[in-house]
Length: 289
Image 1: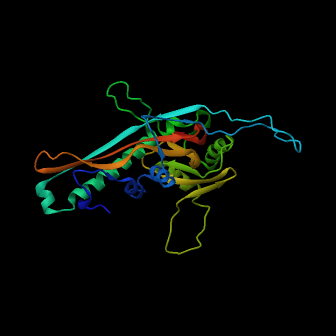
Image 2: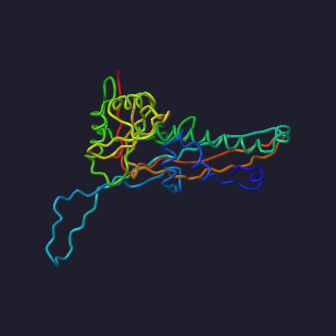
């Protein structure tokens, strides 16, 4: 719980637990990654080896044979840039006297705004190392990370077959076990719902009507549908969650700022990036008119 007594001029207040709990509906991808747990970055560029499986066809062996051949999967080096997210809060002495909890409420709102901005970056951001003006580092988002060979193009509207195509693209990449998710905006979500509008029945309260598709079973796995207003209107993003992680250089914290007048000021800061263990675990479906 945010309390005004939490904030002093001599300490930072960690908000790493609070950010995981707020705005879940507004930030489905960020909330999913936070629920899995985060990784620790140690520099402004986070580097890792691609997660792949060895594809040696025959590994049969003779009983009692000595092991002299060792397998190693080809693992290219991948990286992403740490992006700084910052929101400021300020309240006058008069406003604070009128309502002692107002500053805490302001900080809570700024934290939610920071998480929403982080969600947008995790999905849409284009990589920039910040070496040129305006010198702002930006991470590579999920869409930019996606394997080009996993792309699916659709003309008109999404169909059941196109969803299967996207899932098959991931299935053919020989990925490790994991849950599959599809991030969509409202327009494509409505198209998906309309696919099944005449193919369902109710086994519960007769006062509850309508159809919302939460998951779809295919031969290539079950895909969970998540609605996000930050996904481009013409795209659906399919991914295996075991290949995605959030890495922090700085977890979200509240930092009081120096008092320079009749006001109280502070900032909420986080420095994070997206880790995609293999781009092969991400597929993008694009709908064109």
